[in-house]
Image (cartoon, rainbow, N blue to C red; front, top):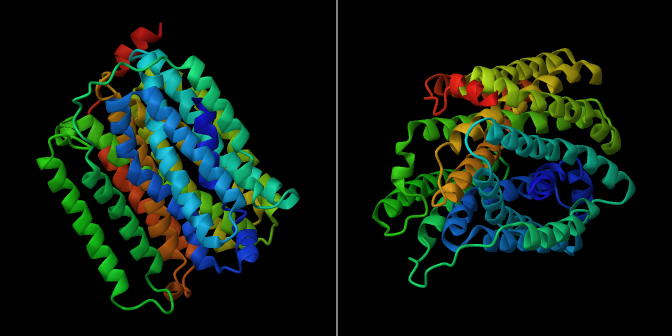
Length: 450
């Protein structure tokens, strides 16, 4: 499960440093290249709810194999794509495969370990693997692009995905027999949930771009709002909703998923800001830029190892607030480094703070988001949490980076604007986390930790 998580996380970021080479290969400008990154995460986030529900209805192992197979096939297609349009389609299919496979994988892990220290340790490993995959995606992208070419940034994961498929057949427990009269899936809800973030991201990315029709951006944003409202209406009336609205009656889950979106927005924004600063401002090549991200990867592993013990002593909410605080401090450092025009060494403190923010914040939020789950709703709880993570990250990049680097704001430092917008979201997340109920107290966790 962790190997699958790792390579799916790698594919979120592995294309960032390779983007200039992809653009040169297809003769595509930077604006169109945005969809190679955002299309994957937005589609994945939009379909994750469907993936979580599929696991609950059809069986986790069946859905795990289906999603993993789709992800592997799409990775092969992306590496061999003869045109840019087919590459974007492959990235969308990768996102769909991830969205189907990951909730089943996470639900498998959650149900293997009871609530308490054992589950917190398991989720810490899961989050550490995901975070390392995100960060090492930058490192691998630089190395692979420099020595093998950008196509291998997609092809390298294919043999490992085959290993996951074979291992899942033998190691994952078989599914319960699904009743023949099982209710149909909520496909209208899935379509609306996917359309909402896609339209919103499209509107934000296209805003201010030369040649964009005046009606297109507001039309896309209105469509996003309409799709979101339609999703709520469909779920309220559906016999078998994609996400039962009473699932959100748990205030701790709601607060955890909302905070996940806001924290992930800041974390994802920081990744692109690091990449842009190293390559565009400092003129470092793909290989050097990838290697410069190593301090982030190494420190992330160390911070993630501390989280289980501190989660037992402090409680989930304290760990989440610490993670948000570290991430906000990183944004301040990024803004100062950009304003002063400092070198690569000055960026390292921000990387260390981001590593701490991910290690503390995401694990604590995952723990709260899946607390109290059962066999019947483990998949949907995992899907909601993963969707919040990915949609938050994609929206953060679209809003913070999109607005910060918009042509209309060229008079302002784009790094300063993006960091400021991310900080506003993080402060909001801290307020939500502060009011978040704790489903398992720090005292109980400490008692079980003995």
